[in-house]
Amino acid sequence: MVFPGLLLLLELALYASCFICGIVTAASITIVQGHFGGQCMLYGLVNYNTTASLIEVQSSSAPSLCYFVSAISVLVAVTCFSLSLDRLWMNLTIAVNGVFLFFLLITGCMLKIGRDSLCNSVLQNVPNITRCEEAQDRNWVSPLKGERFYNSLYKAETAVWVNFFFWITIGVLVVLQRRQSSVSKIIAARFPGYGGAAVGLFGEAGVTAAETEPFFNNPASPQ
Image (spheres, rainbow, N blue to C red):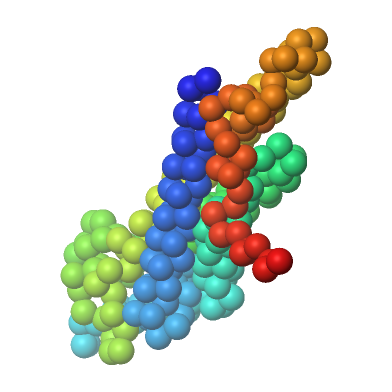
């Protein structure tokens, strides 16, 4: 059957997309930290030095806050290549899906609120700007580099919410596959000749067992 094969291909594409989103989030947060000397600018506050016409950081969050966001993103990315797609792993996939949705929701809210807090400080203290991204064109106290802080934080937040949507979709696909598996088992029990070697993923034809393995498998032991 073509339908189960299409579900498998769609699920693999979603895992690849989740991997990319996780890497984009982690890289964007790391870039901002690097430009601000290792400081985490989520929930940060800034001042404007009118004498030197420079923006300076008044306070920043603990670096561990940004490390947490990056760690969750990397963990999500790595796990995408570790999950097996066979029936034995379906319950685990659902559990992992729920955990990731929870942490991605927290991470997305942290990025949204943290960026808004920083932007409110920028708009209140830096003169002659009406949008937060305009501060990227202003001069910052050396060695700070603020030319991409807003774009990077916005990109990180967008990647998290896209990742969140992808994991919801993966959860729906896994539930559909479980239902297909249950129906196939009932049919196979009533009609013994239905299954056999032609039965593939989750009791459906069209997908081989090799396609349900994790992306990176340990090589077979030598005989």
